[in-house]
Image 1: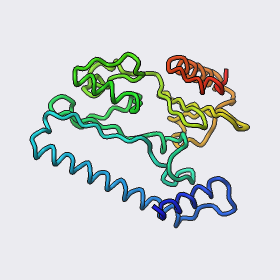
Image 2 (image 1 turned 90 degrees about the vertical axis):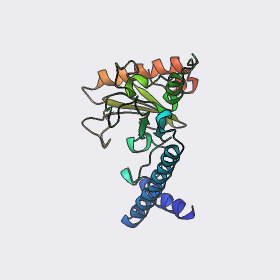
Image 3 (image 1 turned 90 degrees about the horizontal axis):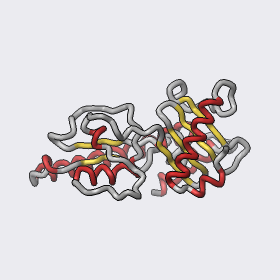
Length: 232
């Protein structure tokens, strides 16, 4: 834990503009620790699968593999999480239900909010009514490669610095403070998220569309905190 904390400190200090940028050694140590942790997670999940096989429950179990956050892993000279870059907010999401969910199918089109969608999905498979106050949607149609009635135009992430809204093409962020409080990134043309298009000529329509999406989310979720700093 001490080693990991020291590496995070070295990398993030450099990214914040300290006099000495993080060196290759710090970033390589960071990546080594991250990959070690990922390997341990994979081994642990493998043991769970083995135990289910041993007791004969593989055919009767719905398995969901996901995470609460990603990791910057040195990208943008940052470590850990707590930012809205794809490295940090993007997570794996895999489901298995043998004989029901087709194996080996990858969906690159649906926007999934795992924190909202897991519970409605499990309720759907269990035959339990989904509480109407939940904001998520069942991913069963997506998982079973049926008509996608769970498709949504955007997903939202939040922390104490602001809100992130991701559509299938753009990512929009608005922050609580700062000289430049908005960002708009074309994720297809700029997957590395290097160019802020907010305020650029030719992107006004996309910026306003995503501002409107955020207004919809604030109303739907009663996000009174975001309402205070959202831009009209």
